[in-house]
Amino acid sequence: MCPAVRRLSLIAALMLGVTTPALAQSPFDAGRLNVNIRELSDDAFQGRGIGGVAEDKVIAFMSERFAAAGFEPGGVDGGWTQPVELARFAVVDPVATLSVGDWSQPLRQGEEAVISTRRPADSVSLENAELVFVGYGVRAPERDWDDFKGQDMSGKILVVLVNDADFEQPELDTFGGRAMTYYGRWTYKYEEAARQGAAGVLIVHETAPASYGWTTVANSWSGPQFDIVRASAEDERVPLESWIRRDVAVELFRRAGLDFEALKVAARSRDFEPVPLEGARLNARYRVETSRIRTHNILARLPGTTHPDETILYTAHWDHIGIGQPDASGDAIFNGAVDNASGTAALIEIGHAFAAGPRPERSVVLIGFTAEESGLLGSEYYAANPLYPLETTVAGFNMDAANVYGRVDGMSVTGYGQSDLDDRVRSMVEAQGRRLLPDGNPAAGTYFRSDHFPLAKRGVPMAFMRGGGAFRDAPIEERNARRDSYTADRYHQAGDEWSPDWDLSGQIEDLEVYYAAGRALADSRDWPAWRETSEFRVAREASAAARD
Image (cartoon, rainbow, N blue to C red; front, top):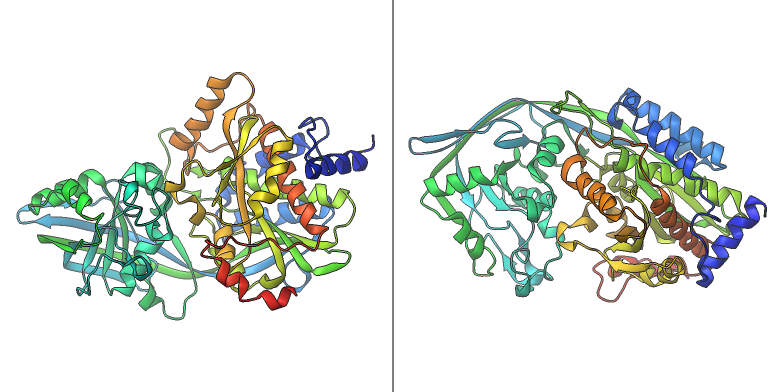
């Protein structure tokens, strides 16, 4: 059977729910996928930091691969990119100290605390700033919740808990149980603090509610931070954005005559009121090197035959952390092989599959987003400045941190129940002998942590799925250990490197589903919809006339 016919057989089988051997008839090339992951995560790409030589290498690499796959440039002015203007903020020589009476605790960068800012200024100086514990730092009128109770937070340092109030006690069900809402995200904590007029925020790090350890915090926020260019950044950002270790917070509260654990419990109630840390003060000063950089989203397009103005999206972020603090072995390059060279290579494979088959009726656009690691900034920029109208973007499939450990018995859907895309992929997953699974850890807030989110909140139905569940092939224990070790030891660390021992059969099964689902939509007149209970339904319905 020729390759093109074999691809069509696989797609037809998946769409009809017929079980087929996963790899024997796959339209995807494991060898090519492996090579592209390895190259993108090579030291020569310097951890794929944004706005420099490494970015130029990524753009050249991806545009060359997209063209070879058979796609045309999908960016601005007939090129492969969409320029994204960002502000860059680097904290220089931070000196900070917590004190209560004659007790003081230096906050060393990356040790007891991580200090950053995204507010334009030459320097920041906070002298004897008062501290107040504001629970989870949430104001949610629709849930009858206000951690501030109208008190004046001007010029104060807010001490807040990570996640939201249901994490420790999900039966309260004030925020939907143990499934993080946007109120639980660190981004929200800083945004609300700015609205309250605060001078800064200390987020107390705890591994379980954050879903990552202190090393991840130190690696992610010790270096330069980025933001989209804002007209009123002084009003939207606080001078001090920071995390502190839990043990430091516990001692701080004790010195102020407070019980940290008791206050955590109190913060789960709607009746909670802010608690001043009597006598506690923060002193901090640091220079801020502010500049603007231009980075780029990378886009490729395959025009549709009959409805080229309607778009199916496939997305993945190409960036990673770049070069940071050396680890114990002296390695300072954060290669980002799993996160997210694996997803970027998957974009290229999706391109090969579409270009090799019959031309789709609707257009297919592949986007490599920039600055995901800086707060979903590339996808936020695209969603605010779309090159293809969001009203006629049919749906999208986001790929971030693929399964590189072998075949699994399920496909986990982050944001399960949000849209009918769940139902559309279910038969395809089951055709492979697998199960469609809800997000295994909704408390981690993963739905708000990848590039589908800026598009989803503007109404575009977006699927974020990847292999999950139990491994199907021996050695099971070894595969489990490798997967667990990534989260514990390599996520956002220099050890996220390509391995010749990877088994990409599981990623390829996922790619078959992404492709089959997108292909079915590309050759139909269907418009996926949000569920009645989804907070994104209203935004989509507002543009319904554009899809008549």
